[in-house]
Image (cartoon, rainbow, N blue to C red; front, side, top):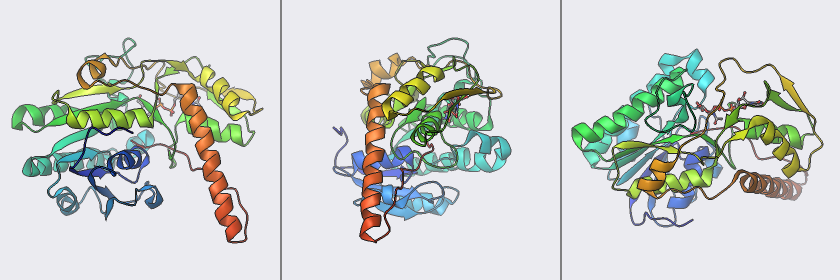
Length: 333
Ligand code: UD1
């Protein structure tokens, strides 16, 4: 991947996680990369070998201080990404998702570093209209969304009040290799079901829509945010294309060559009906353009997990055990 950022010292928090580890892969060839992760959800094997790993906790200001020393750019991806966990524990998740972000901003001021921070489409809650622009109503429906909204506002404020260079990226439904953990998105769930020839379970009528954006496009947006002059604001990161969950189920059956049945169960309580990004601001000011359409992304995902499976099988064969270990699935921001 073409990297506009080179010769810098950068910190990626959550750099062992889903999005963070892909970002590290893109940055490592041309930059000095540090990763701060507590491996609660991340995986050590996913961290690029040239990155320096700091096994630390976002709740510990000393770890933040150590990790951010002399950096030029901080990509703050570390967070509790589970919406349901935030509903169960608003206070505890706020500590990680919001308070630690404030510590990060404070440290960035001392270091005079730019901060690119992971926000979320969750800041919008139930949209009044689609596609959603950045100036749409902000009414989150979960503590997670409130935490992301607060950090998104703080990013702008730190730029306005203190001149800190900040950019907030509002991720829509991100998918790609290495998504893992107990909180797994619909794509990884459907892929697992299709591979196991189990029924693909649509919640509700399947007419609800989402904007699925490939992690490589999300990485591109981060790299552009790291070098743009248009700081102090938030950008939607999606594709601008809406896909219904029913269409997704059919597409997944196709790309996996599966004969799984598609079944419906009760809709999810409080589910967002339609969500799709208006990405014109990111296009105009960052030069952001998503390059991977859903079908191409899904086909890539299927073949990359086949390669992982084959490699795991080969390793196990070498150990005399055989085996078939699929790529773990789940989510992360
Ligand atoms: C996503 C984000 C979340 C963010 C929110 C903001 C992911 C994984 N989550 O949630 O962090 O806060 O956007 O709007 O990207 N579904 C099924 N069958 C399944 C699983 C899901 O039909 O087995 C349906 C759900 O009911 C939902 C849709 O698929 O309508 C997407 O679900 P999910 O992948 O969990 O993401 P969001 O709810 O959009």
